[in-house]
Length: 325
Image (cartoon, rainbow, N blue to C red; front, side, top):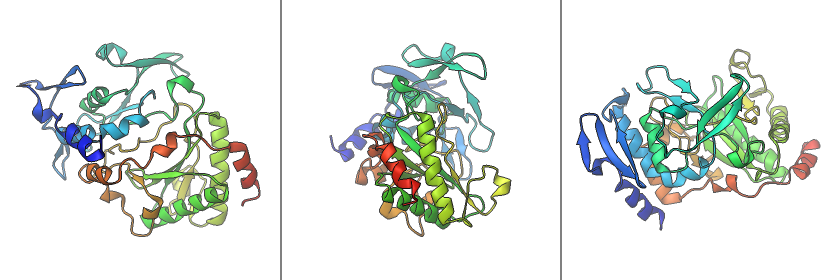
């Protein structure tokens, strides 16, 4: 099925087509599962007037492309049931509240000293259920339940201080240059907020510790090339006018906004995969939002799939990076 036909098919399944409307919400059937979607007219983005229903519509349009980045990955739930103007909250271990068709996995938590149930977003029905809970953004782990200790990719998160997005672009291109010299394929996406995420596929061949060592080496080389513009200092107070090259996202349980995830910020922006040819001066993350991204995917397809492909030879790449080449 082509991307255009798939999008039309997805649109045909939206809640507007549901067979039963009642006071508690709208009843929909997705892949054989019945969901009651509530408060669809609740405004989540007051300045734009975007509603919970708009959010669910967006995710149903992109679910086909987004689900490969969610399947088999524990989810870190960040809920905003009253929209972006009110503080959200994180929630774990909600198994007792879930329908029996939603898959979960029990993972031991050092902080609570007990097993916690994490949702696995395996299908569109589960994704819609999460959106109905007020999960504006979707945060999957970097690893899958089959290999929790071995991530699919190494991640570098570019987090600006009081920097322009053109400066974020400058740093991203420097990261790309370092990785190119090491012979590494890498993929980038907007964070959906002010930063950018760069992923290197590892193919679940290496541990998180190895992934962090690699990401740290890349960060060090980029910082050496752009010492005034970049920082390895985590504290925002220590890097007000510098872009933080965050390599510490490479730990079990860490999560970044997924590809195609909406963010709970003005504009309903989306963490959007980019072609490297698009990463240039003038790029604006606000161009990618719940209204523009579905059509973009129709035109380009999913350009991010390589992050889930076969991984690099980490030892060889680190050897090349030792000399800074």
